[in-house]
Image (cartoon, rainbow, N blue to C red; front, side, top):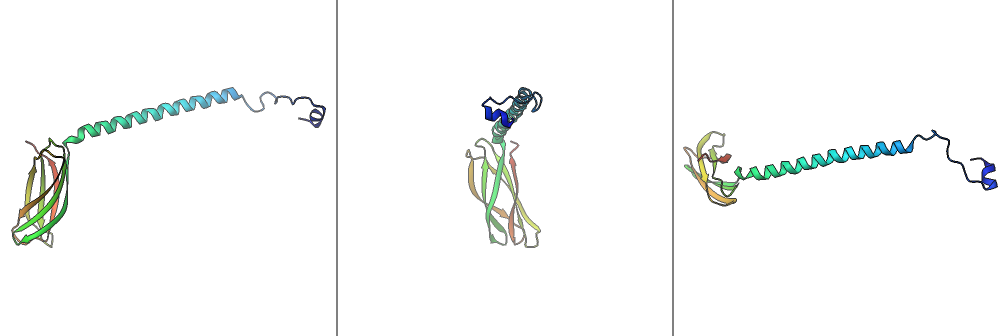
Length: 145
């Protein structure tokens, strides 16, 4: 815009054609990118919801446990306090072993949990062949029967 245009009160002219590109084409490209991004994110969100739903449905057959504490009651016995989490209809088997202070195994026992509850605390006893120094939870699995 020249100084003469602003002084004589005439309206400014539009920019020369082609100077700033085609704004309609730019807007159409931006809209297309946003639609593609929305479709990708929507698909990813639906896949995530499906994955969580599948994991929730199939998680009823799992069992997990934690060794809360243990007590060495004699040279031939260790007691272990287990917290077991499982599905109400699942029968689980957990294996616990007793170890000496130099990590030699002196006892091992499997325990079956078939109570119709989701969480339980149990104190179990492991017979040992020598004085134990600790107890260790090996793991838990659903029962085969």
